[in-house]
Length: 111
Ligand SMILES: [Zn+2]
Ligand SMILES: [Zn+2]
Image (cartoon, rainbow, N blue to C red; front, side, top):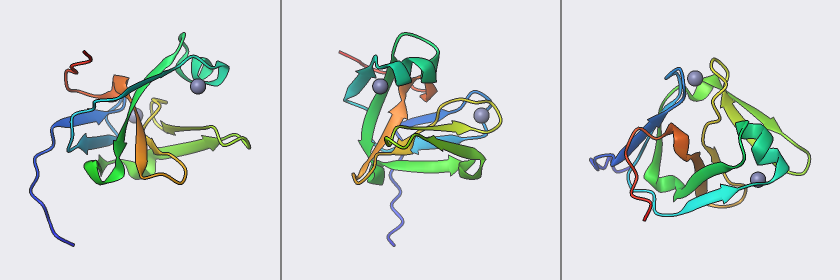
């Protein structure tokens, strides 16, 4: 219940801006997946995402605009109901949230 005043180091939003979030850490791990599902999800050859601890992630706006589509296998695609952008989702049974890198407004150092 402590209200920390940590300044977000990153922020992101979907294509239309209805869904917004911020990060308290700089993403350091990048995750690329070329599986059939991710190719269809993104419409290109692979997705590119990062994982951060949920305590370093905050929804700023538009959580109610998110639609979640799931396969029985567990694969899921959460997206903005207005513009269709894939948006972050919490990985099952982990304290991590998966964030598509394309949503971030901040420049990334991917060295
Ligand atoms: Zn949107
Ligand atoms: Zn994949």
